[in-house]
Length: 199
Length: 199
DNA sequence: TTATTTTAGATACTATAGTCATCTAAAATT
DNA sequence: AATTTTAGATGACTATAGTATCTAAAATAA
Image (cartoon, rainbow over all chains, first blue to last red; front, side):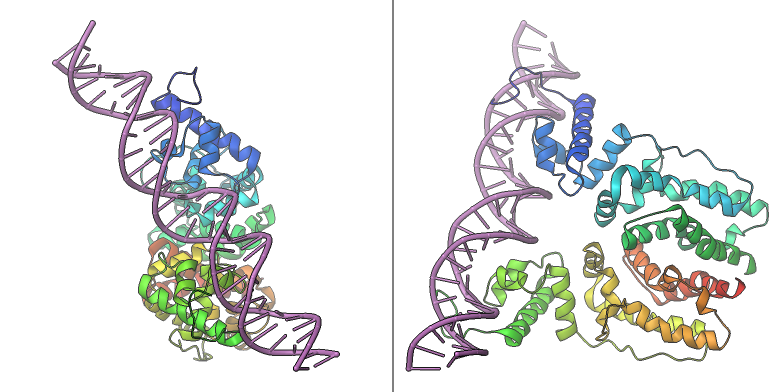
């Protein structure tokens, strides 16, 4: 044994905690592009093998470390009384996320194919459903009761539209502002959702 | 000189042609995931540096080799007389593209950040405009003249919607069928485009 | 307490991306 | 024909991802 001579060998939850903490600190110091498996392992005083045993790549590690060590982003259930404002409100937390993680990381995460897990960063969501589905479903239910939409006529392509447009905005602009949200909702999402009434 | 003893040193267009041909053949043999810069260079009897001098990565090389050596996908200007059918027709060529390149390659190209160049595969498009813009603009002009839309009220987010939805469908399903096109147009794009009339 | 099982840790390895310095052939210019 | 310029050829190099294998510590079962 060459390094770490005095410390006990860590295991299980304790080790996992230390690994994710190292990943989070490494990300803060280096940024997403310079975040490497080697770097994380070195900071945690272990080796890549230990990381790969748990997570398949740095995108997944960062997501998990964010859940443990990142700032808590408030994602309370929304109920403004009308669909349009519910949607805008629902889409605000990702802005905070971009502020915390930065453009480079968010684009990196999307490029690394974990864009659809971005909503999963806000809370622990159980089951196999996409996080966006879990969040939008109660909003649409209430809108349906008020007669604003007809859920029976809305499929996954339609209900996932807010997430799809958030992601494509970030990819094309490297940015996400409040105005983007409002435009997405007013110019695209609302017309599509309303269309569910005339079928 | 160790290899290639008998052939003249190639240059300029001739060399570029050979490199792209090697890339296309290599892609046909190995598939996108196993396509490597080394492999392409070896097949062209040269080295990676020669490739990197021209193109930054394998995604861009494949796109360029497709333009030279891939099958020609018909992308005639569309004019069915109504917006809805123009849109569906406009979106059909990508299906052929997926048939030729395969799921792995298309997802790879999108992951490698060149998804927005997919429409550029159908023809030589000049200028800095996104290819999708060039294709959809005349369609929207005619629709505007017929009173089906109001172009003044449509921004880039709206006009790029067909391309965004094609890409997100491929990413989420790894597939693109005629039914997808029809649903995209009828359930999403048309309601959004029509909405430009009431502002 | 001892034997067994599990899993962390260390080392070495392969594959690929991408860069760099240098050499040299071929084209362009004088 | 001689010289200069351009750009292709080459091998070496670094960085990182990801894997395979072996050793040893900790947990557990006996």
